[in-house]
Length: 137
Image (cartoon, rainbow, N blue to C red; front, top):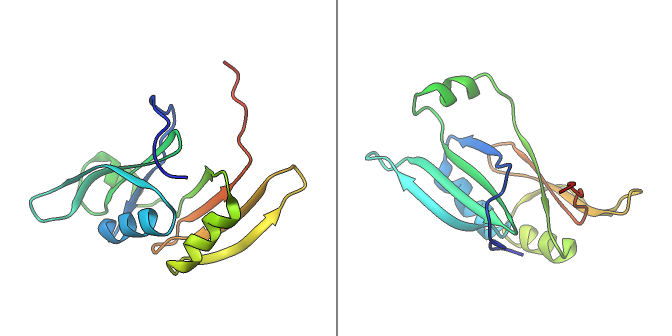
């Protein structure tokens, strides 16, 4: 469920959090991500973090740090991220055990996927399921 299958993903969702450290704890504890790197500023805020699951990664950091990305994200809404997992029901149980807000329990979809939806501590919507789009090589 967690870890990195190697290589470099070509797409990495990037999120900002008011409490990035709490977000990292939830993403690792409840959703099974693994910390790849966490860099802190002198004030202890998260300047940049990378978390992995499977062969994908997300990058995140603390809101309000200044810079162009922070400015661009200031008027943005919440983010939705889809993550492919092998065992949706086990993944869901783990999220529930760690107190994640579940928006939709594991559900079989008409297009063949089984997935569920959760909200993180700052309102971003995370979907975890078995559907993996096939990208032409």
